[in-house]
Length: 176
Figure 1: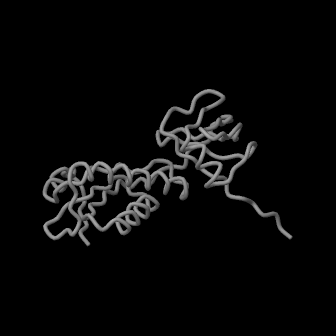
Figure 2: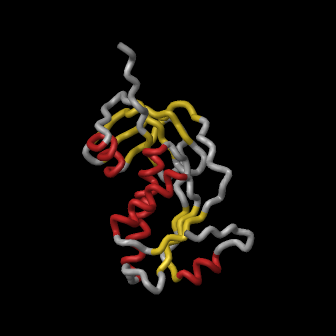
Figure 3: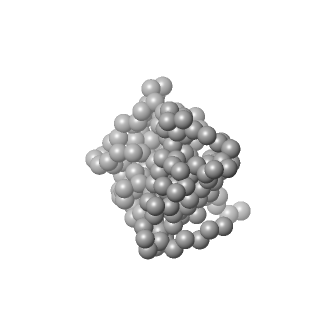
């Protein structure tokens, strides 16, 4: 029988990963303890999407958070040399979530959700902000799962013409 290796879980933390220890908030502690089912002493990789990856160990998990012991720095996996921007017409919730997840896993650097004349989905300003935050969480989660280090930049949904004008002049445009 061969040795079964368990995949080392990854945790995105939107802050500096300096020092020897790091406090976790309630959501992060819940994710490690209840979703990933980690326990004290289990190892993981903490990354911040800004170039820092640290080997870490769960020091404690409590009802309101926890603490990680930060160990050595790791070399972050290189990002693709391709600077891919996806212009995506707004799709219904589940479909848009899936598109953001897969685009992140494939290495897309920027996602521009666009409102087109024939889009079924219409977002008011409040709902637009909530959807943007939701898509950003999905992109961070996709990075944790796929091993990618940096989540893509996701812009606020805008009209198609405005999004096209925001593209760099030198951008190669592939329309499918």
